[in-house]
Length: 217
Image 1 (cartoon, one colour):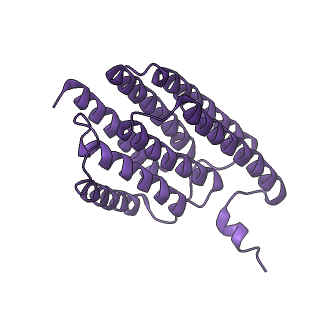
Image 2: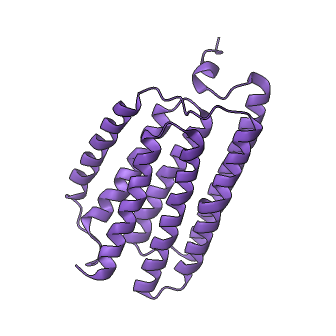
């Protein structure tokens, strides 16, 4: 295994471990900051792929990833969190220990599925594919398990990070305009979510989706 492959695996493990931490952590602000750390991991991973392939546009993708997902979105979510005075806990449907067991099960599923897929390039290992799939599943579980809309949005963005990890390692990235367009869509989605949460909090004094469901006649 080449040194580039080893570094790629380490960075993909970092992305996955952050996703596991988000699944199991009980503090909402920490979950938001962990998402920012995941953005930095993806930025560094983009730099590595760009260096290995000689594709300069991936450096711009890396810079945008770090600025948008590593800094801007976490800072914006923390601002929204302060504005709506949401509690620090994400109020999960299952306990932390149960969430950890589910996370372990999802990782086993991801690693089993990855063994049936052949890597697209010699330097890409199945562990990287498994990490990307497991990250997507962790984000999905976060959306299912958490009751607060803000945490569910974090879960959605973690899913998107897993898809990005798969795309950039499997295809060496998409055209620059496409990748920047996707990041712009993510920024718009985060911005709209923040505005909606402010409106919902102003009307109902909470952002618990279970309580909002009970309002249906």
